[in-house]
Image (tube, rainbow, N blue to C red; front, side, top):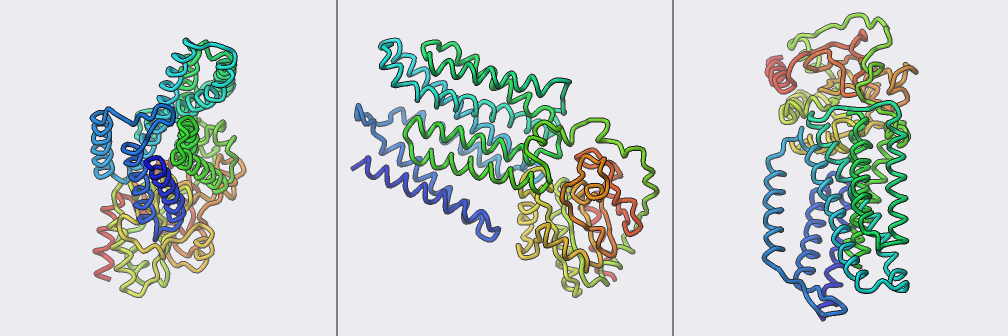
Amino acid sequence: MGLNLLTICYLVASVTFILGLKMLSNPVSARRGNLIAAAGMLVAIIGTIFLYRNTETGEHLHNYAWIFGGLAIGGIIGTMAARKVKMTAMPEMVSLFNGMGGACAALISLVEFNHLSKELSLNNSSEFVSSIQPTVLIIVLGLIIGSVSFAGSMIAWGKLNGKVKDFSFTGQNILNLIILAVALGAGAYLVIHPAHSFLLYGILALALMYGVLFVMPIGGADMPVVISLLNSFTGVAAACGGFLYDNKVMLTGGILVGAAGTLLTILMCKAMNRSLINVLVGSFGGSSSSAATTGGKDQGHYKEISLNDAATIMSYANKVMIVPGYGLAVAQAQHACHELEKVLTEKGVEVNYAIHPVAGRMPGHMNVLLAEADVSYEKLEEMEQANEEFKTTDVVLILGANDVVNPAAKNDPASPIYGMPILEVELAKNIIVNKRSMKPGYAGIENDLFFQPKTSMLFGDAKKVLQDLLAEIKNV
C-alpha cells in the first residue's frame, strides 16, 4: 500500500510540474504555476521521506534528524535569499541556485559509485560487472554534466556580480575540447572497467576544469544564453539521478528542466541571430579591443534634453513607448517607471513597454522587473509587436537599455552584434535615452543611436530622473 501511495504522490508531482511549466508561459498565470509546481515538489519530498521502501530489503528511510535538519537549513537560507535579493542580483541568484543543483547531481554520482565499488569488491565476476555497466554509465554522465553545470554556474555568478572578469587565451577552445574529450574517454574506460575507481575523481577534476574554462571567455552580453544552457545541463544531470534511483518524479522534473532550458537557449540564440556554437566560442561581449571600439568612425555629437522639455514632449504625445533595460534594474526604478506610466495615462497618453528577449542579465529579466511594480501584463509588447508600433510612436523613452536598441546590428556588418534583431526605436518621431553616462553597454560597443538627430540624452540615475520627470509632467 505504501509503495502504491508513493507512486500516486510521484504521479501527482509530475503532473503539477508539467502544469506549472505550462502556466509559466503566460505572465498572468506564471505565479500560480510556480506555486502549483512547488506544491507538487513538496508532495514528492514528503512522500519519499515517509512512504519509500527498499524493494529488496523492505527498509525505509531513517536518520530523520539529518533529513529534516537539511531541509530546515536549506529552506531558511533559500527563503531569506529569495526575499532579500534585489532585482539587479536576481541573475546571480539564479546562477547560484542552478549551480547547487549541478553540485547535488555530481555528489549523487560520487556516493552511488562508492556504493557500487563496495559491491564490486565483494563480487567482481564478469556477470556482475556487465550488470552494473549501465548504472556506471549513468553515474559518469551525471558526474560530468553536473560538475560542468556547477563550475560553469559559479563562474557565471562571479561574472554577473563583477567578481570574475572575462579571460581567454590563444588556443583556449582547443584546450577545452581536449579536456572534454579526455574526460569522456576516461568515463568510457571506467564504464568498461568499473574496478578502476580512481578514474572517477580524475573525471570530476576534468569536468570542473572544463566548466570553468568553458564559461570564462564568454562575455556579459551572452550571459542570458549561458545561464539558460547551464540550467538545461542541471536538468539533464538531475534526470540521471532519476535513472539511478528509478525515481519517476526526479526523472520527470529533470527532463522538463533540461528540455525547457534547451528550448529557451535555442529561442534566445534565435533572438540574437546567432548559433549556439557562435555564442560558446565567439566570446561576444568580452573585453576584446575590437568590441570596445567603433572602428574609427566619427560618431559626431550627441545632444542633451532638459527635464522640462522631456516632460513637455511626453505630456503632449499621443503614444509613448518605454524600453526598459538593465540600468532600470540597477537604479531600482521600476516603481517610479510605473508611476510615470500612470500619470501619462491620466493625461490621455497611450503608454506601453517594448521588451527585447535578451534585455537584462537573464531570460525574462525585464518582465519580472516590471511585474514587481505591478505593471499590467497587457502593456508589455514583445519585440515583433513593438517594432510595428514604433512607426506610430511619438516618443520612445529608453531606460538603461543599450545593445538591444543599437542600429549597428542592422547597418554595420563590421559590428559584433550585426544581424541581431533589435528594437527598432529609431522609427519613432522622438527618442529620449536615459543613461548615467556615454559609457558603452554590456557588449562593450558604441551605440550609433545616441548620435542620431532624433535622439536626445537625459543623463542621470534612472530613479532620480524618473521622479524629477514625474514632478515636471504634473506641472505641465
